[in-house]
Structures are given as C-alpha cells and as structure tokens.
Image 1 (cartoon, rainbow, N blue to C red):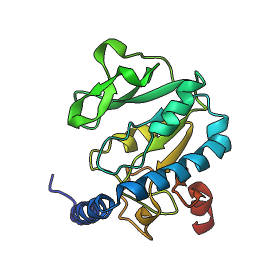
Image 2: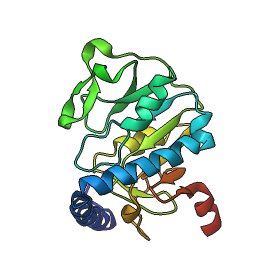
Image 3: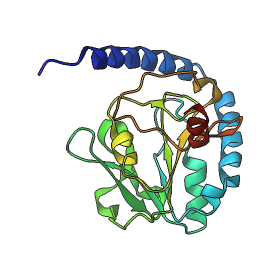
Length: 206
C-alpha cells in the first residue's frame, strides 16, 4: 500500500520540528538548565497527582539537556515509594516499565538510555493510580507533543490509566504541532514556569 500523502507531510513536519527543538534545547546553558529543573521539581512535588500517586513511572533523563527526572526519582525512592523506569523491547517501538529499588541498578541500554541492569529487572504490576513523566521535544498546551520519533510513549499512554505529565522547558511549549491519529496527548504539562492542565485545555477548545 502506498504511503498516505498527508501522513508523509506530517512526518516531514515533525522531523523539521525535532531538529529545531534539539538545537534550541542544546543551546541551554548548564546554569539555566539547573535553575529550570529545580523550579520544575518544586512544582511537580506540589501536584496532587504526584503526592497521591501509587507509583512513579519516569524516563531517566540522559539525553543532551533533557528535562531532568533524577530529582523526582530520588524523592520517590527516598520515601520507599514504587518507582518504574522504561525498558525497551527487542521490537522497535516496544516499551515496558521495570521497577527499580535504587538508581545504582541503572546501566546504559539501547540507544544509550539508562535502563535497569538485566539482574535488576522486575515485572511488578503498575498501580492504576500511577503518575507517568513523559519526555518530548515540543508540547502544546493541549498536551500534544513531538517525541523522538519511535512512538514508544504514544503506544504506552494509549492504554495507561494513570496521570501522564509532559516534561519540558517553557521554550519547548508551542502553539501547534502536527498530530497523527495514534499520537496520544498528556494530561498535564510541567515546565519551570507552571503546570498546565492539558486535559482541561482540550475540553475548552472542543
């Protein structure tokens, strides 16, 4: 079957937006990043969805100038609250979450991302009231996002029953992004400036 012209156009637009977003994020200084990450962490820890979460599902920030998750990972682990991190499967786009008991269990995995070492992988069930932190290169206030292109989080979030939170810097928030049918928006968006209720924004805009 021939590729759909509209999907090809959207895919091209996403590639262009990814390049632009990566360049802008890469220009963030170390000091600015540290300040922004600290402010965002404070906002996250004040969220009811985070305070009442049965577990934290979070990517381990490791890519250049990616919105930091180490602070909140440490906060949950220090309180002995359940923490799960992504584990990519053998098939492209396949992702599950594995529980960790310590950040020392992490090792470089596929694509250079930090994952649980094979000896530290646990298939504990994820509580239905978990909160999931979602990476991205650009977000709208309605929660639509440009990811890294693999569709890992879109597939996971399509069946996720907890609260999803996009992680970004304020300059990553844009007016619009091209959206495909399988793209799954996040419920909330956390930057260093504020937490946006994306689900409410979608309801307001119809």
